[in-house]
Amino acid sequence: MGIQIPRGTQDLLPGQTEIWQYIENTARELCRRYQYKEIRTPIFEHTELFLRGVGDTTDIVQKEMYTFQDRGGRDLTLRPEGTASVVRSYIENKMFGHPSQPVKLYYIGQMFRYERPQAGRFRQFVQFGIEALGSKDPAIDAEVLALAMSLYQELGLKKLKLVINSLGDSESRIAHRNALINHFEPRIGEFCSDCQNRLQKNPLRILDCKKDHDHELMKTAPSIIDYLNEESRTYFDKVKQHLTDLEIEFVEDPTLVRGLDYYNHTAFEIMSEAEGFGAITTLAGGGRYNGLAESLGGPETPGIGFALSIERLIAALQAENVELPIEQGIDCYFVSLGDAARDYTVKLAYQLRNSGFTVEKDYLDRKVKAQFKSADRLEARYVAVLGDDELANNKINLKNMATGEQVELDLATFIEQFKKLQA
Picture 1: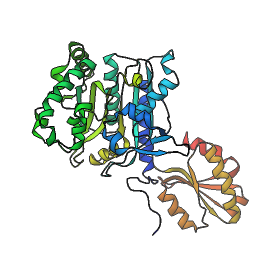
Picture 2 (picture 1 turned 180 degrees about the horizontal axis):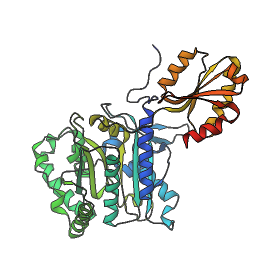
Picture 3 (picture 1 turned 60 degrees about the vertical axis):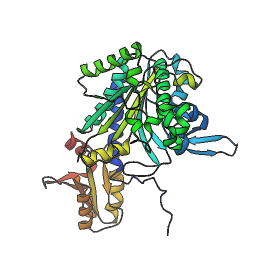
Picture 4 (picture 1 turned 90 degrees about the vertical axis):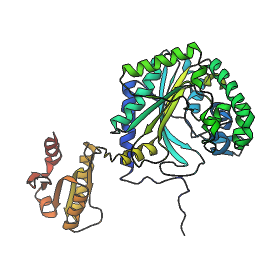
């Protein structure tokens, strides 16, 4: 048997890649309107970046990272998420000194996690994400949420639910942390080994456990909302007010816990409520991560962002039966009869392509009927027919495939005449 694709990866073939290109172009255009600029970071980074940035108690770091040593003995990791890399680049390139603040960035790139492949989830996947660095204004939290929702809506999704929560500032989180320890510690032996290890290190992670999700203590665990100090409550109220002003519907969920250690204050997820989408409904997630830059050796830098999987987005489009308005067809197909005519269409195709038109011709020396069938498959708007006789008389026939109308044009001025037809 031949070599096959690794488990958890996929080939994107012609017919599929056009969907990806449309989504990516829509995301880029939306970022242009919101003034987020593209950043491209390496596919692999020093492992320490994710240990410090993502958190050594997270499932990503403990179970899912692709880590290896290079020939120099350095520990490197294929990036499992985008935020840590962006913040590392922000610090390393001193973007905090740029005159235009906050720094607003977006990325589209491949990420890698060793997890069980399932519908819409792969070990190599593509994330689109944005990061806004340098502002503590609750308005930019609302802006990030608005951009995320706008992308899904512009692509045609309707069955969406935005869920938000506040994880509070450091003071609030410390108070909540102590309450969680007191809550779980007497019966921690009933929980999985991961939860037992997290009790003292990061008890908030226990709430995100998939194994013990149905344990009775989960249902009665202290809510972060009850431990928010006045500053955190005021901040969260302001974010919610902005969303209300923008007429963006949301649901508050005090149990929402993001899977990465760097989150504080605003946290959110966007979910699909489409019938048949699957048990895992999350499409995108994000939140505020004040303190992440400092943990990576940078200056004090508030930040907020989100990331979404394009694979999950496409699955949601399929669940809602959304057909993207992807442009089909080509402008012109050259049908040739005879060796001299076939050779001459090479130049004509080149000239039309250089004029900005989509063009194809026959390269298999097929009969005229087969060439017309090929033009039909490609949904050609025009077919230009050139035979050796027409070439000798400096003529070429052009057929409008929609109307069936056919005209004879001078070969010498064919390119200019074709341009006028498209004007």
